[in-house]
Amino acid sequence: MFEVTVRDSIASAHQLPGYDGPCKDMHGHTWKVEVSVAGHTLDKVGLLTDFKVLKDKLKKVLMPLDHVVLNDLPAFKGLNPSTENIARHVYRAMREACAPLEVKQVQVWESETASVVYYE
Ligand SMILES: [Zn+2]
Image 1 (tube, helix red, strand yellow):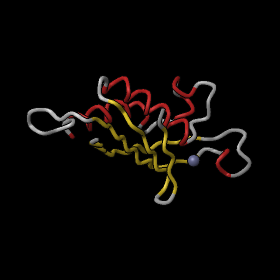
Image 2 (cartoon, rainbow, N blue to C red; image 1 turned 45 degrees about the horizontal axis):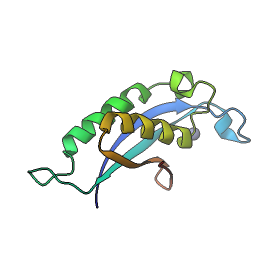
Image 3 (cartoon, rainbow, N blue to C red; image 1 turned 30 degrees about the horizontal axis):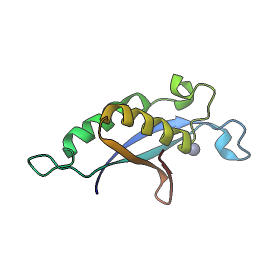
Image 4 (cartoon, rainbow, N blue to C red; image 1 turned 180 degrees about the horizontal axis):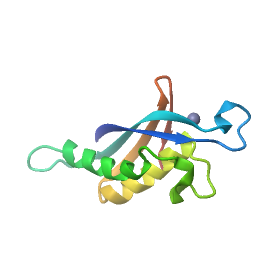
């Protein structure tokens, strides 16, 4: 099994209503977002997928999440834009963008020392 991972980042604002602490107020992060795709079969060149193609897909998925207030986006209507919910949103969007390639997981880093992994 091969696994290919690419990384990009978004810089945005969010707030987490209901959180008992400072994160209930508006603040910002630079989230690092990593997506991993997996498969057994390589193409004639020897690639599972082209890094550039995968990076372009991730960039398209992340563009609407960059330099915005995440709470204002339809994707997070009725949901706090927690790192967990961001990871699930990106996973599902990448799964649609990458089909039939299997998206194994999305990992979102909120800081250098804290991340969330989402997979289905
Ligand atoms: Zn935060």
